[in-house]
Amino acid sequence: MRRFRFSNIMLWVGLLFIYLPMVILVIYSFNESRLVTVWGGWSVKWYVGLLDNTQLMNAVMRSLEIACYTAIAAVALGTMAAFVLTRVTRFKGRTLFGGLVTAPLVMPEVITGLSLLLLFVAMAQLIGWPAERGILTIWIAHTTFCSAYVAVVVSARLRELDLSIEEAAMDLGAKPFKVFFLITIPMIAPSLAAGGMMSFALSLDDLVLASFVSGPGSTTLPMEVFSAVRLGVKPEINAVASLILLAVSFATFLVWFFAHRAEENRKKAIQQAMDESTGAHLQAGPDSRRDPSQVHA
Amino acid sequence: MNISRSLSRRMPSGRHLVIGVPFVWLFLFFLLPFIIVLKISFAEADVAIPPYTEVYTWAENKLSIVLNLGNYIFLSEDSLYLAAYLGSLKMAFVSTLLCLLIGYPMAYAIARADKDIQTVLLLLIMMPTWTAILIRVYAWMGILSNNGLLNSLLQSIGLIDAPLQILNTNVAVYIGVVYSYLPFMILPLYANLVKHDQSLLEAAADLGSSNFNSFWKITVPLSKNGIIAGCMLVFIPVVGEFVIPELLGGPETLMIGKVLWQEFFNNRDWPVASALAVVMLAILIVPIILFNRNQAKEMEGRA
Image (cartoon, rainbow over all chains, first blue to last red; front, side, top):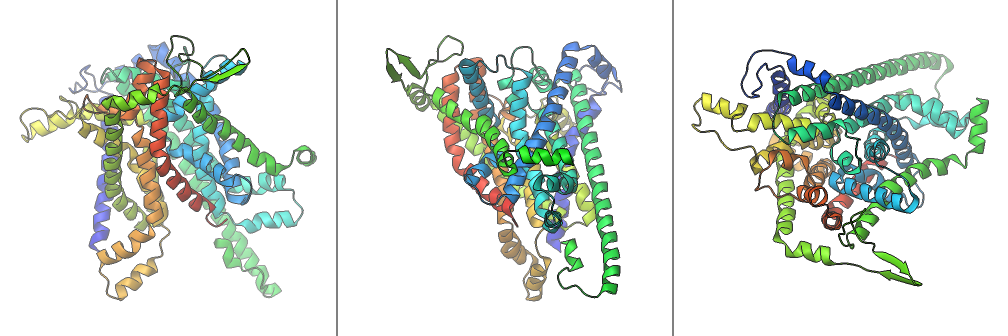
């Protein structure tokens, strides 16, 4: 089992590699000294100083606003795309559709950003919309690439679902829309939450797309941070960065926790329903069409 | 219930709507922009708003299309651009390889861990991908700089006398890229490895195969799709990466994402930036199609 041990060591070393720089960053954000490499004792003065920085606070509010809109739109759009990809097996242009959904995952951001900006400029010339670039254009850019992430997360979930539940509802006369909203949505809810959270975080983090498609007066938080970071390491930026890190980690943990709990409850409910049905089943005699063990799959 | 029923009757058929909405959105905001980039790459830079000349003009009942190939000729003549493309490809290739070498054992260890620990480990891997790449790269600036933590540490234990120049070199860019993209390698590999049937390895062991032999001949070939997905998720975005070379790299770091950014924001030469993007896309189209095929296979799955 030598290989097994080697991979475990790699895992711990890798995790250390991933987390150590972030931990160091957070620790140094509490550094009293203005010199970022010299430890001068603990202090929260950099955090307190942030509150007075109105320019930064405006950028934070703007970024949060865009991230909210993006999360909502990306979940709606991504879920539709995932549904089409997993359930509608045949239609004209399906290959193109699949490509359009997954390509934004890997497309370099500079290309997407530049092309979207040129689209907005051309549209403004042609039809006069969007008249000016700002929150709206950033939202469109973020929604486009976040919905690809949502589509991947949701389609993974849709594939795992037991189709027989939806089929049963359909057999009992429910319309497709009703089946979708009453049966499918509740079953994929954890992945919707995860997708929404992910879109929120991705939107909050994005620098390149926002830099291309934003206009004057619509600077987002990453753009603000980037222009400061370019000039080197600064204690104020350490504090902002730590706050973002902590906020995202906390939110990730919350989503994971609720998704995990929902999953546990669902498993328990299935188990309970199966126990009951096998009880009834034993009395009624064997039914060859429904094998309860398949519910697990 | 009545509302939803009457709503569904009035809808132009749910099927079309569900396919149509994402299709139109992605067509309008993802595919169409590329066509415009292609168009503007044939324009000339101009002192105007927007800063390029029109490719089509309609005057006196004449439609004239002027395709200016000057931008492409300019790109091929200046060796800076070729060097930037090659630099990007080399950077992407080497860091993809490094990510695979580090990420594969990690994904393997997670896939073999207990079910409960697996979810925690996955969360630990996934969390950084949700955090700004900008901030994680920034964290390295403080560590790698001449009077930074790494150099102070090495000096205090007496390993080196003078500080090593790491920040603003390609080494720093490699560290930053591997650091930022490692999770994107691990997640698809894990998703693949966790599905493997353990009985195959047991059968091989019963027949006298060594652990390494079984790993190399069974596990690795079975994880082919995971390896392709992971490598593409790293390679393609790294070719166009801007933030990491900008913050960690130095004068020796020539990468196309950075060059494109400078052409666009500093020189305000939109046509040349467009031509750079078109060439980059032409280079990446094969890996992107490979990735899409692979994803389509995964997504269709059981459907």
